[in-house]
Structure formats: structure tokens, C-alpha cells
Amino acid sequence: MSQKRSPQSGGSGQEVRAAAARALAPVLSDQGSLAGLDEHSVVARDRGLLKELCFGTCRRLPRLEALAGVLLKQPFKKRDSDVQALLLLGIYQLLYMRIPAHAAVGETAGAARLLNKEWATRVLNGCLRRLQRESEALQAQVDRDESVALEHPPWLLNALRQAWPEQWRDIVEANNHAGPMTLRVNQRYNDREAYLGMLTEQGLNGHLCPHAPDAITLETPCDVTALPGFEEGHVSVQDEAAQLSAALLGPALAPRPGARVLDACCAPGGKTAHLLEQFDIALTAIDSDNQRLARVEDTLSRLGVEAVLEHADATERDWWSGTPFDAILLDAPCSGTGVIRRHPDIKKLRRKDDIRPLAKLQRQLLDNLWPMLREGGTLLYATCSVLPEENSEQIEAFLARTPDAHVTTPNDVAWGIANGAGRQLFPAQGSHDGFFYARLEKRTA
Image (cartoon, rainbow, N blue to C red; front, side, top):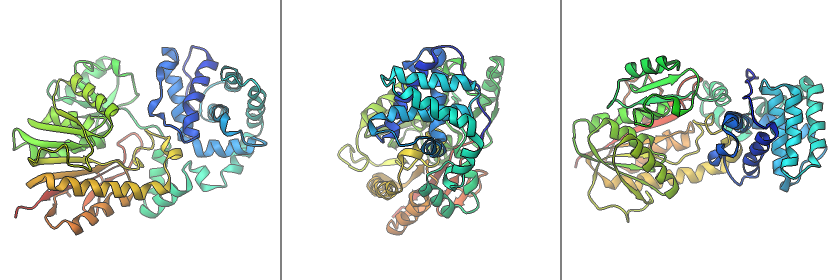
């Protein structure tokens, strides 16, 4: 069990719990995700608590759901997924947060009234008080199931164990803890040593990351408005593993000022921006999601860099001018199994049956984009997955059907492990997310 967290202070306890239940209900009924969490649905001082309640509950969801199943005499009806969410939130507070038990029980049960379901207050109160009385016995009972004790769905636990017999336990443990806040320093304004000094002056402690040359990890997350120069584009928030894409494309881009670069599937734009900060390039960034593309535009505007942004499908070519690119970054849609700690609702929303269609889409993207690359050009394939079907096996199959593809993934780096034609990083507590990279060069005829 993790160390308990301290509560945020202030605001209506019932209101923030009702807001959390409304946000979690679509996740529990497979109708939505935490990506749309509206932190502004509560007063400013309660936003940290709202986020902790929602993300923490999803992070521990398999175990919380098992306990809820034992506590309830019969399951709630589908239309009462918000009440189910309140029960899970209450269990999470009692077991994982430093909220006084009377507040965890009373405020959570009372929040049912704000959902117009006053009948549920008595049910919730009874379940949570029973958990107080029988906590050790109930936890021991549900933890007999390994997937419950390790807080991962069975299919994913089996997939990790099969793919990574030596590392799977560490991956699982990392998934069950929140990821750190890592920054990318814009070298156009400061080197990261100087910026670290600026952070220290602001009372924000951090350390230089070992692998990405622009990365700093904070000891404690903070609001971006507290970061010196954030609004002026001096710094961005981006995981260390994600920052490695710029370093991997560096050998192809640094010697070619004005190089034509394609960032396929570019949203939310972190890698796009990093490339533009680092290199003198003409970059086209495409994405099939118009709303997410708008976020890319906002990011580039804040940083004062420019790219050609297009709402387009990277499995098609109707958007392409026909002029080949010198480099292509394909950050492919994937299962997200390397970033579960940042998107813990994946534990609920992702299914085993999702992996094959995702692998098919990745194959389509590779096959469609490769002809757009000039001879001698570089394609960098990336995912935030730890599953071989999306990573090493995907690239192995591509190489088998693509005779002019040559592997140039570096072996002399200190990060990740060699995995087929690429390198695999695993999520690490206090450090980077899980990621896969494979760098390919198109042979000249």
C-alpha cells in the first residue's frame, strides 16, 4: 500500500466529491476518460484535491472495485455509476489519503445529495463504516486475487509478465504511483543549469535528468504559472522519455538547415515544439483530431515557433504535396501502457482486444508514410507503449516487407534496453515514462 497523501484544505467537501463522482462516472461506464476533467468545476483551492481524488481512484481502481464488490449487498444499477464512483472515492480516501475518517465518510456520503440521490447516503455511509471496522480482513480477502493486489486488470498483468519476465513487477509498481513533473528547458533562452538555479530561487527544488539534455525533474509538482518564464516560452512540461525524440532526430536535422520535417500524429505538440526549439527546419505537423490540433497551435504560439499545421489523416495522402520529407517523426497511436501512471483510467478503458486494431493502424501509418521519405532520410517510430506487438514486433514486420529500410537506432546510449530494432524504456518511479523508439533510414538506390 502506498504512503497516504495529505488532503487539500478549504472549499465544500461535498461539492468537490460530487464533482469527482461526476468526472469518474463516464470512466466507470466506458463512456469517457479523465482527459476531459474540468478542474474549474470546483473553486481554485479544491482543484488539487479534485485531481487527486479522480486520478488516485483510477490508479487504484482494480482494488477499489474489488472492495466495493464485497461491501455492497448488490451492485448499483448502471444509471447510478455516479454513486458507484462515490463509493470508490470513499474507499480511496480511507485507505490512501490522510483525510480524517469522519470527513472521508461523512462528506462522501453527503455528496450523494448533490447528485440528487439522497437515498444513497445511507448505503454509502454503511459501506464505508464497515470498511473502517473490517479494513484489514476485507483487504486481505480481496488481495488473494493477484490482479487485485497488484492493481492491474488480469489481461494486462499477463501481457506484462509474458513480455517482460524480469521487469514486469517493476513496471507494475511504477504504474501504481504518480509520475513526476519533468520540465523541458528551451535552450533558446537558458541552459538547464541556469534554469535550475532560477527554480531554486523560487523555492522549487529539482534535479537534472540523466538522459535528456534539456530535462529537469521537480521534487514536487507545481502549477505551471509558478514556473519562471513559462508564459514567455522559456520552459515546457514534458516527460524525459518523450524528450529523447529530438536527440534521436538530431543527426538527421542538425547538418541540414531548412530540412523538411513531418510530425505525423503530432498532438498535443510537445515533440513538435521541441524540434522547432532545437533545429532550423521547415516542419509540417498533422493530426486527425481538430481539437487536439488546436492545442498544438496554442503550444507553438506560447513558445514563439512556427509550423504548418494541417488537420489530416496520416493513413491517407490527400494532404501531401508530393515533395518528400528529409525526416519523419511517427509518434504512433498506441495502448498507452507506458504512461498508465499519468493516465490511470487506461486500467479501466483499455482492453486486450484493442491491441490488434492498434497494431494494424500502426502498420498502416508506417506503410503510408515511408514513401513520403526521401532517399537517405530518417523516420523515427515512437510509442508510449511497453507491449512488443506495438513496438519491436511491429518494426520487425515492417523491416521484413520494406527492403530499403535500414536500422540506425543507437546502441551506445545509457537509456532503455535494446529491443529488436529499437530501444525500450520502462516507466521508472521518480523518473521517465515507458517509451519505445526505433530509428530507420531509407537506403539510397
